[in-house]
Every structure is written in C-alpha cells, then in structure tokens.
Image 1 (cartoon, rainbow, N blue to C red):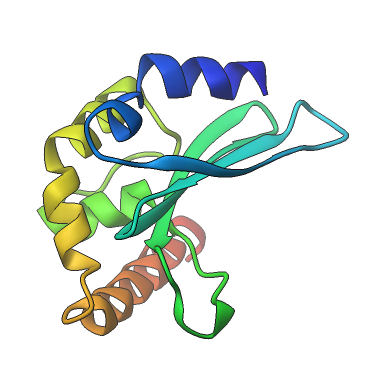
Image 2: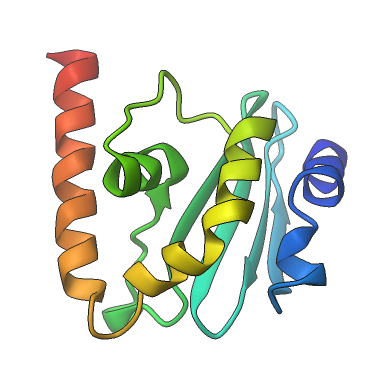
Length: 135
C-alpha cells in the first residue's frame, strides 16, 4: 500500500488537486504486497493496483451499468485514443503524464453519448492485445 500511496502522491495527484476526484475504496492483500486504491469523479472511476510488485492503473465509467466489474487498462485506453501500442500495461511516469495531459479527452469518450461505442472498441482492443501476446 505504501508504494501505491507514493505513486498516487508523486504521479497522480492531479486527479485530486485539479480534476475533482475523491478516494472511494482501498484494499490490502495478504500476499506479495498486493493492494488497490479506487478513486472517482462524477465522470470516471480509476483503480490503482499493485499486483505482485507491478503497478497498474485501470478506468471505467463512474456509474457502470448493471454493476459492471469491467475495468480497462491504460495501455488499451492509450491505444484507442492514439493508435499506439505500448509494450506493457504497467503504469509508468510517462503514462501518468499522458493521462494528466489527456484527462478531459478520456472523460469525454466515457460520456453517456459515447460510452457504448467506447466500451465496444476497448473490448475489441483487449481481444487484439490478447491475440498479439498469446497467439
């Protein structure tokens, strides 16, 4: 959890200082230092995860339909918005900077009038990524 809090403070503080997000949940696992911190605004939810010493940042609509547990990794989100494929889904400082610079655009693609199309495209890209990684 300490590592996640450091990343939140050093790389992702813009969510709280300029974008109106708030902390809504956290969990600490029983092994490997696994943990998560969830935060959201009225527009979008984010989940910062430490899983077996790797850190990931995922997003989803702030109010998903049907209690959806569907989260989208930032690498797939970046691929949707730029066409650029990242080598890893791990959060880096550069990815955090990209999210900060593009947060308004990210929130727009999750707006009510675009959410279904966005989720459809993200799911297609997740399938493509799996095929690229695992054949």
